[in-house]
Length: 209
Image (cartoon, rainbow, N blue to C red; front, side, top):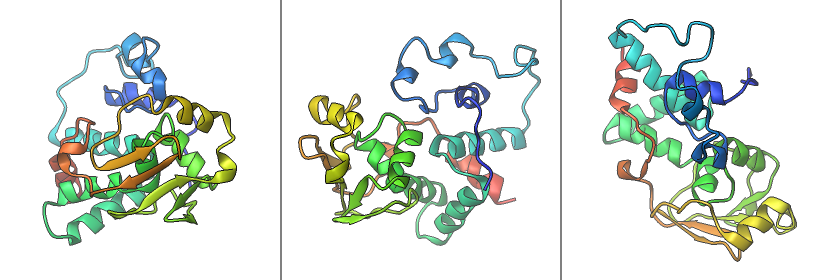
C-alpha cells in the first residue's frame, strides 16, 4: 500500500486548515499554517479561481481522510459501512472514524498526534480489555478499556504522560487515569464530540454520485 512520506505540514497547507498531524507544534507559532497559509507548490500563492461543487466535495473528503490518516480505499470502506447503518450516513461515518483504536488512544491523550499514536499501536504498546491489539483500525466499543502495556510504560513518552497528563483535555466520551495509563470508552462519540471542522454532507454527496 502506498504511504505518504513527505512533510505532513504540506497536507495542512493544501487543505487550508490545521489537521493536527504534528502534535504540540500545531498549537505553537511554528505551525506551517500560521507561517505560510497558502497551498504548497510554486503556484500556491497565485490567485485561485472559483471552486466547483465537485472541487469542494473532493477537498472535504481529502481533508477528513488525511486528518485520520487513511488511504482512499480504506476511507471508502468506512463510507460503505456507514451507508448500511441506521441513521445519518455522514454522522455514522464520523463515528466509525472516531472509534478507531489509534484515534481513541489519541483522544485519551496517549500520544501527541494521530500519526504518532498509530505507530505506537502498530508496535504493540496498547491492550484492549487486557489483550494486545496492534491494528490501528480496530473499532472500539462502549465499555472497552484501553491500557498502555506494562513493559511499555518505561518509555520516555509514557513517563511524561503519566507525570503530566495529556497536553489537551480528553473528550467526554472517554475517561482516563494517567497514573495507571488506562482509559475507558464510557459512550460512543457523537457528532458534537468531533472538534475538526467537517461538512460531512459534502463527502456523502461525493461518494453518492
